[in-house]
Image 1 (cartoon, rainbow, N blue to C red):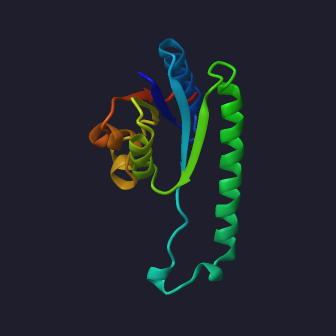
Image 2 (image 1 turned 90 degrees about the vertical axis):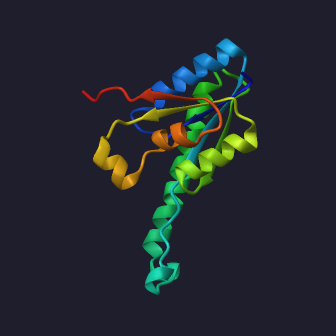
Length: 150
């Protein structure tokens, strides 16, 4: 095992998922990449609007990108204490689609990601990246359950 991707979403699952990925990277002497996908801004064209008509949404999306980049950098700094050659990648798009694409691009040997356990209704309505990875990934995928909320 040479390349591990850990998908992070900055939820309550992130620290546990990251720690397990760090432990695996250290044990195998593997490269580790933190991966985060930002949901794309909504398309207004179907409703006959342009993004210029919604400047608040544009500002929100820019702020989301800025905060995600900041959090990813903070997490990478922490991870590098244990895995000095760790890297990060942030992209925009569907989390499942972009993660599957990144796995192919990077020749990953393993993907580590969290499961929130929101239940069947949430998975049906919004989908589940973890479930999608189990079904569609071409490499082994380790799903780490989120710590129970107190």
